[in-house]
Image (cartoon, rainbow, N blue to C red):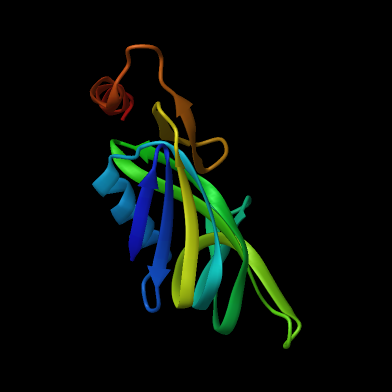
Amino acid sequence: MEYRVYGNDLVIRIERGEEILESLQTVCRREGITLGSVSGLGAVGEATLGVFNRDTFAYEQQTFTGDLEIAACGGSVSTMEGKIYLHLHMVVSNVTKGICHGGHLSRGVVSLTGEFLLHKIDGQVERAYSPEVGLNLFRFLEDGEDRDSQAAEQEERA
């Protein structure tokens, strides 16, 4: 992986054989990015995509392999319990085979190249589990609130 920083924007090239989420996590850690948006395209040889089952409160996943174009990939960077939290969705396709699959990205291994743009947002948004929805939702911090006070609050609730 190689990237360049231009103000609040990063241009990232993910190399053949590298996993997308791991690569983006590495960039976020190195650059101290805790809030942002991600978009990308390229090609993968393996993509594990999922859909959230509202009845079971669990992701149902399927792994697709072969020559797959990343037709679209987008999502967010936030934090949960002080750690980088990536939430990306991806659409992969192969027009010669008439296939197109999309969903929540759990794993994506680049087969040729991945071109990603990461926009850093000044601020912080944490995630918190919602038992009503079954997902980790955005939790907007109050002015002056930081990760430590939020972690203490979560421990009190547990």
